[in-house]
Length: 381
Ligand SMILES: [Zn+2]
View 1 (cartoon, rainbow, N blue to C red):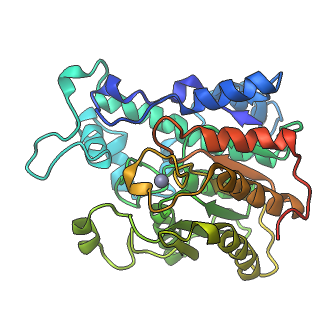
View 2: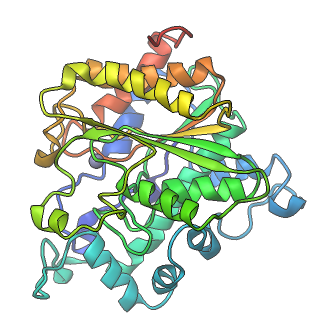
């Protein structure tokens, strides 16, 4: 199943943000696939929410007759993961929201002047962006639910690809690197709190390290939190550029040990520049190691943060330290899916990073390949 909704598009210029991130990546992916596969198994957020609710049982064990009422993601879902004071600000006045967004999107300099932001060009208040971001969180959660409930048909059965989301840099008490709140961990913890999944793998293959996710998982573990009663857990694997995050040396110098970006994932696989040909082997080793370290616990779900920015044609100059060919990008995703399918682990895939004109290509080609060459178990090394 694919999950795509035009409501999720963040058209930066409408908010006065002058960062050249084209909003059309999900559109291009669905257009490419729709030409080849008809009908395309795609849902929007509303259909997905209705889809899971028509299955009957809601949180607390009550039925609501299949009607979705109220927001899927609530303040308490964010508070389960992030600092409560930080979340209170986001749900408070627009001034506080704007402040958090200016910092997260790096739109303000230390002297208070604006960077790549011109409010006089905006047709919508910056604070409204928070509502769109909440929809991304909703999408990551719904994709996980659809995957868990196996709502999909060939060639996209047993998994759901959400064509947005992936805010893996968001930290415990602040946004970071264009990520305000962490949709991935919020979705995972909500599933655990609702007792829908106990053990979850986060497989992050975006070009940048999933440092915010690592921090949130570590902090929650340090607090000794449990979700529902079934000894829940998350294992974080991140395969990323060995260098290049954070982008400037000043913020790296100011970074605190044990906090993002310096906090470790459960398993980090840094890839040095020019090591692209080792990428697939190291990923395969990483998946095997993750399974080994998980002991006898089989995860109920894997969330794959499938950024396209390791692609050699990615438009973000700073992600150029990883330069996988299109074939290698497709092989990356097929390897992960094959690994999970062989073990009968449902997976929710999140779009995450990818910049410039060609950023839609790896995801579109991967999804297309599933019809052209169905995954057979044993494809992975
Ligand atoms: Zn990235």
